[in-house]
Structures are given as structure tokens and as C-alpha cells.
Image 1 (tube, rainbow, N blue to C red):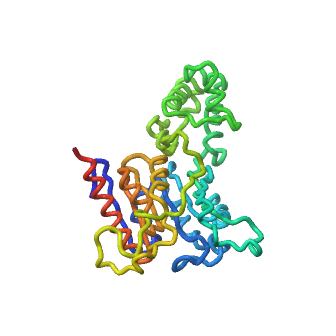
Image 2: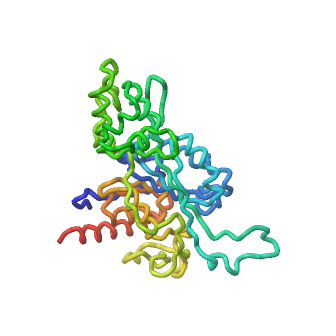
Image 3: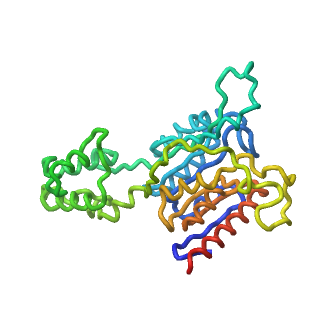
Length: 346
């Protein structure tokens, strides 16, 4: 059910490969699929097979993503390492690795110290990617940092004139046109000034400058859409400490909310072996999307990312191939939608 932001959800009971073409382009993709441990039907038994498993999905992600789409890839360290080269070749740029520290209790009592010959593992990772922002030019494809300087120089303007364009003493040249690690993505207002100045004072023979379509200079609103949203949470780092789920949030065999009709495993057994904390998914969704944005969860499981998205006023599109998980996920999504709508109106 939509709210004033157009929030809604769609759950496909089957392979996401069948519905990517039908889903609206995502602002965010949350991948919590195969780990290479044989944990569910179709999951390879070794991480070495993960690249082939993910390849068709990554091809679709790259095809339908927006320039500002972010990807959050959950896996083990070795599982992610096997898939990383494929993501890079698909146009995804690594940003950082978030480590979920599950604590010593996660492995205490389950390790034979005489035989393990390594440190016990108490972590998973969520690796943050964004689309690699590149531009077509007569000299080939250029990353954004290089393109900004290239267009300014193509206009025949000295680099120092960027400071005049932006109304600062020396920060524009140092931040927006530099080619070193100090480079900044120009904010929309500063980009507007650079574009306007280049087209007004640059070589008339080369106009227009800073075009996305080859004909019209980029506007500040168009430029802002090339960069993903970001809402900073003070004090939150890339290490997230929480034990594996337990208590009321961990879904057990006796159901989600009020659907005893659904067949489930034993009443005390966890429904899904790797259910993610909703708090983690909320952090991701609220950090890098805005209300009304589309979030894809192609390997839904119990659809924790989609539940978090709906609760935050985003639109969630999920798929799940295991019918038992899909049934329970649908209940969670419907409940999140009802709750979100109820709290959106006075």
C-alpha cells in the first residue's frame, strides 16, 4: 500500500533473474545471497563457485542501475573476495567494508583448539559499492575527477579561474579540479557555477561544456542525481558489534505474526539460519537512500532489507526462491507496510 512517498513493496516468489526487467531502477541493491557454504537450495558448497553463481545477477544489476545506485554485498570474507573482481568489471566501485562482529559467544564452545590451526571466525562483511561515474569524451571514457578538469581545460581556462567561478579564494581549484586524493565531488551549487562560468567565459569554438548528452550543459539537479544520497550518523563506524539474532526478532518455526496456518519447522527452531538484524538494514537504507527511493533485495530470505526500506518510506522490490521463506517474508512486508502507513498520517 503506498503512502505519501509512494512507498510500496513487491515480492516475487521465484528467481530475481525473471523480474529484474520489470522492477524500476534501484537507488540501492542489498545482496544477501549465496555464501558458498551450501546453506540453502542452489547455494554452492565452496566459495570458489560464487563468481559464476553471481555473474548473471551482476550483469542485470549493472544494466538497470542508476548512476547513483549503491550496492551492499553481504558475505563471508572469502566469498566476497571471489566475487569482487566480477563486480569491478561490471562497473562497481569499491567504497568500504563493514564488518559485523558477532562476538566471542558466537564461537565459544564450538572450536577444537587442537585442530583448528587458525583464529576462530566471528564476523561477516557487508561491502559497500557505488557505480563508477564515467563520461564519454572524444578522448575516451573518463572518470568524473578527470572529466571535470578535462572540460575546464577544453574551455581554454586557467585552473585558477575556477576559484573566481565559485567565489572562493583557492578551494575550487584545489578541490574540484585536482587529480590527487584530495579531489571532492562538486556540490550541485558549485557545479552550477563551474558550468555557467565555463560556458560564458570559455572558448566559443568549444561550447557547450560539461554536457551529459553532448548538447546541453548539465544542470545542478541533474548533477545531484549522479551522486548517491548520504545521511551521516555520528559515531557509527564500519565495525558493527551485535550478537547473532535471538529473542523476539529472530523468527522461529511458530510464525511471524498471526498466521498459524503456515506450515513451519519445529516451534523453537530458527526459520532462517542467517537472518540479519533489522537495525543493520535500517542503517544501510537510511544512510544511502531518500524517501521514495527504490531498494532491491534480489535474495530476500526473510526480506529484512525490504522491511527496513518500507518502514523508512522507501519502495522495496524483493525476490525469494524458497517458498517457505517467501511466505513468511510476505507477512513481514505486509505488516511493515501497514505499520508504516498507520504512522504516516496524523
